[in-house]
Every structure is written in C-alpha cells, then in structure tokens.
Amino acid sequence: MKPPPFVAAATTFLLLAADVIAQQLPDVFHVADKLGELVEFQDEVKAVSYSRSTTGFYLSFGGAYPAQVVSVWVSAELYDQLPGHGALVGRVVRIKGQLEKSPSGPLVKLEARDQFQLLQTDEAVLGKQLLDGRMDSNQFKAAVRQHFARNDFETLEILAEELRQSRERFADGSWLSAAYFNAFDLPADASPERYEKFEQRLAEWDRARPGSLVRLLVQAGFHIDRAWQARGEGYAPNVTAEGWHGLKRELQTARQLLESHPAAKTYPEYFARMQTIALGQGWPKEEYFRLFSEATTREPDYYDFYFKAAHFLSPKWRGVKGEWQEFAEQQRHQRGAGGAGDALYARIVWSMKGNHSDVFRDSSISWETIAAGFDHMLREYPNSRYLKNAYAKFAWRARDRARLRKLLAEIRNDPDMNIWVNLENLGMAEKVAANRGER
Image (cartoon, rainbow, N blue to C red; front, side, top):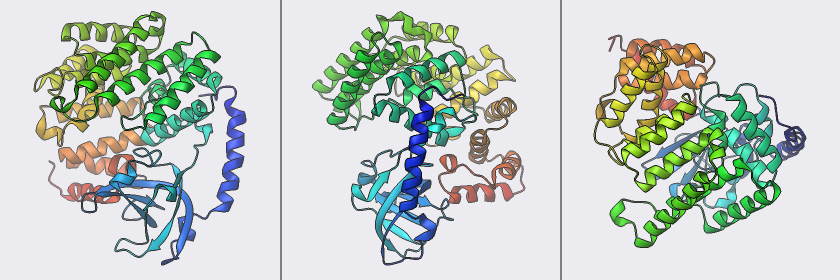
C-alpha cells in the first residue's frame, strides 16, 4: 500500500526522534549482566505470558520464553493499567527497575506504572507493502491512533477512503479497513477522562471535516463502546438499572447516527457496527439476518460479518447449542465446499475459538474441514507466517501429528508468539509431533 500524503513527513520526524531515543537507552543485551543494579532499557516485547501461579504477566525481551534475555513481571492489576496492554508483542517499550536473579534468568518486577513507557509506533507501517498477523495489525492500529491523537484528520480521511476503494488485505487475508476502524475502539475499563477526551477530539474532527462519513462511523463506534462501559462487566442479573439504561441510550444513539446516514453503507464497517448494535438491542433473528443478508450482498468477503453472526448465534446470546456451528456449515456450502467455503468455515471457527476452552471438545466442528480451509487459505496467501502458525496450533490441538510435523518444519525457525504465547507451548507441540502415531 502506498503511504497516504502527509504520512511521509510525520514518519521522517518520528524516525529521527526514534534514533535519538535509541541512542539514549541500551537494549536488554547490554543490561542483562547488571544483576542487583537499577537498570533502564528500551527494547521490543517478544512475548507476553500470563502466570496463574503469580497472578501476573511476564514480558519477554530478547527472545520468547524460555529463550528470553530479560523478563519483566507485572501484576495483573498493574498490567491492565499499562498503555497498550493486550497488544504489546512487537511494540518497543522502556523499562526501569531493579534487575534481579530468578530461576528463569534476569528479572525486573514492575511496581509502578511510571516504570513503563510505551514508545510511539513508526508510522511507516501505514505504507508497508506486506503486513501480516496480529503484531502488524497492532502496529497499524497504533499508527492510526497516533494520527488521531494529534488531530491529523486529513490523513485519516485519505487512508480510510483508500482502504475502502482498494479492499486491501493483510497477508493473512484479513481486511485492513477492519483494523483501521478497530483502532478507535475504547475498552470498557477506560477512564471517564479518556472517553471525554475522545469525544472532544471527535467534535474537532467534525468541525474540521463536516459531513465526514468516516468520522460518523468512528462516532457510532464510540457510542457503542460507551454503551458497554455503561452496562459494566458481569452477567445480566448483576447489571444495575442505571447500567441497562446507559446501554439502551448509547446503542440507540449509535443506531440513529447510522440509520440517518445510509450513504455510509459504502463502508463495510457500517454493517459491522449495526451487527454489534443488533446484538446489544436483542434483535429477533429474522431482523438480524436481514441485516446480515444486506451486508454480505454488498461485500460477501468481509469476514467480520460472519464472525459477528456466529457470535450472535452462540448460546451466550441469541442461539442454542450447536447453532453457530450449523451456521458455519451453511456458509461453507453457500460459498462452495472444498475450496473458498472451507476457508470461510475455518475462519469462522477460528473467530469462535475464544468462546470455548477446547473448541474440539466443546463443539461439533470438523477438523478435516478446518484443515482443508487452512490449505486453501495458504494457497491464496502463501506468504502469511501468521496463517502457518495458526494452522500448526490448530493441528496441535486436534492432535493431527502428520500435519503438525509438516507445519512445524515450516515455522520452527520463526514462530509467531502472538499465536504460541511462549516457546514452552511450541515445545509441547513438538513432543506431540514426535509421536509417530498418525493421530
């Protein structure tokens, strides 16, 4: 993708700034031997792992666990306060703290938020020719957020329109336009001040570009995020009357924004936003799937439509046990079993994996169809390291040793820690593959 106008100058500035910062702080390789000392370093996060035994997260630097050079431990409570938490792999951060000896090697324990600094993303990522997987997606979204933070609405408008027209994909086939709009998402636990500042920036965007459909879609997303913040976490019986009122009010505001601007339907995210509203408002299935039909008629390859529909059909929401799997199979046949339909089936299952502790045990999915789907995806996107790693991890969970051996041979020297989390998991997969029984 060609970088939009105005990105090049900002990128040059940030690269120069990054060079200055890099000269000021050493990387982990230059501090790893300073046990017992107060150290400060700057380096890329290679992996993030949650530890149940310590109720905290380990950030690995210099390599993924157990090949890390330095580890940084942070409590779960403090981790949730760190900027960028949940998407730190591949990001460059500054760490300051006491370097201690531990059974797994040099370790810094973070005790306060000011010991951690997330550095800016190089905005050249917006013009990078090949983006692949979650790490590049996180970098892309961070760059979009940086433009928003400095009110660079012209670049945001140009980029959104370019992505709409080009229908450009990541190397794994996912849509850049989906990542673009997801970049503006606010977590439910964000502070009221952060929501207020975001809303003020949206008002500035409106003044700078009145009538912008891109701003409208971002604003609808803002009200959706605020709806779920108002509801709060937890099961429905625990939601307060005030929480339900806030959810209803904000979702209706988002819906009115969208329905009063049908021209925004030229962006697939219009329908993705409406699907989320429909979920929260409890639309009947018939009404929901009329929306789904219109969405997929306009853009049949926008995967988020299918992921959201499967989620809608899960027992947690509007479906019954087995219904989302039936939906996945139905979409497979409509798209064409044995090819693109298998790939869509695999993507839908992949999107629902987080809803199950063991998707193979808890649901009636077909591993052979998933495998055929990944084979099709890799024929279409042969350069995706992310797809290869995801396929290998599915094969591990399915205990398909024959496929796992073949896939591990391709990724062994370049595993994706967004998929594996740590090298320990990869090692367990290697052990499964070493057993010569076929399944």
